[in-house]
Length: 169
Image (spheres, rainbow, N blue to C red):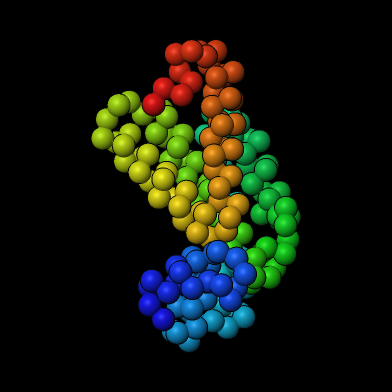
């Protein structure tokens, strides 16, 4: 298979999740596709998602939510919303999508808080790239737009600067 095939020949799978399929194809080609490795990978990605919640929630809700973020991350680590996503290797696509969604939203919040500089453009570029990776992992990656709208609504209510701050790009 070629790199082009990884992103265009997904018809046998039934879904368009090329990043997920690319991992399986590359792992099989490297001889590293056993069930133990897949279970470990799911647990590692889930742990990374739980740790990212410590940054994601304060970025979305405000700085004074550190204790709540720790509690939510701890509960999520112990009992994820969809246990099968962690327990079954087939759930890796959901875990990867969540990882990229959280990273994209962290970049989004940094871009919205930065001044008009090259750094801001870099944050926007990183956000767009991570949104693409989230979508290529699982179609739920499109929910980044909803998270961005929620962030803007929370930000507008929190700052009370409706006309001046909301959607100023």
